[in-house]
Length: 471
Image (cartoon, rainbow, N blue to C red):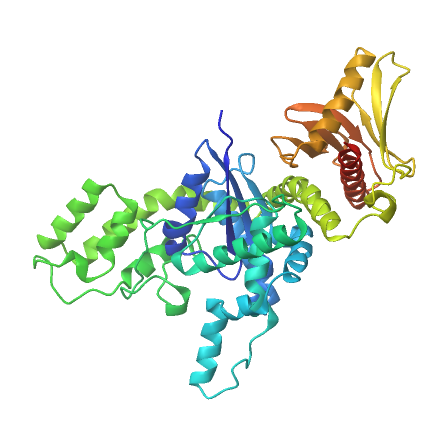
């Protein structure tokens, strides 16, 4: 069975979704996520939103509206990883690590920054007038969003391809400086779907909030949808007079919600003299057939805590991947825990103290292994095994896995999971599909997270010491 391809999509939380967002981004992204070979990550890019918007109420409202919109449109939190950017503290930390290896010249070439400079220059202003570091450093934060989760494919519009190329450049630089010949960060690829529909707005131009020509997706209910469609610009041809289906937005929008045959029939009726008013009523009914049931789900979600619960659970799922990788990157750049990453250990001194495994027979009569930190702290307790050999064999498996050149933390190898059976205040160690050990419970999530990082650091230090001891 082939591994699933990890795909990541970010949604900026600066406004209320409209019909163009649904057709051009939401619907195709959800179709992609439904593919059995896709491991989809969706996140609300609320840190990015701060670059464009300084209205706290709008940011807060948009986060709820957008989360509820994606869930109402069919996003399944159990199938994908759905989270808020601001709930993952590893993202800004990685962004800083990446910032430290990113050339200023690379940022100078970013399209958004250059466009802002050009606009200032054209108006006779200082080149950097009004440009904040958020806009300037935007590509680094976007790189952190992508690289932290090892996304292989990032669906973007053509205007965003440069940011994915920058993420690759930054990752390659980091790998070169700190990887020691290994790829610490996976290189993503931009995926541009040339067939994604660009919906025209009320005036025939691309539907966009900046043009004030949008049709609401859910806001305002069916009446708002009907009123917006009634304002679509058409010509003065009367009922019975032939009409050009391509002279306005009606036919293009209709085709986005109908089958090819239905779209062709609609265009033919316009050529045959269908009245503009009746055409708009047909368009409203066509859209409402698809959007109406979703709007009902959206309305229910906005008065419940479900979106918040889904995002919280998604953040926990995302951090299971983020925390071990960031611990690995921190160690790579030298930000190591004192008890497990001392200079003595890194010199591979034979007398250096590193974490160790011990096996024993428990009071239950079964056999276990423990993993103790360099300071003797109890970091992990295994599940029960029937024989001492079984416990010892798993210790060997873990040590060999850590020493393999191709070893990575991840769901297809060694990974950590939050233990839900104790309210999420413990964690488990899994190898492939085998649950091996657990730690906790801890007093709170912060203590649990600190213990996870300590474990990862101690294990990786042991693996490096074992590798250095090999002839």
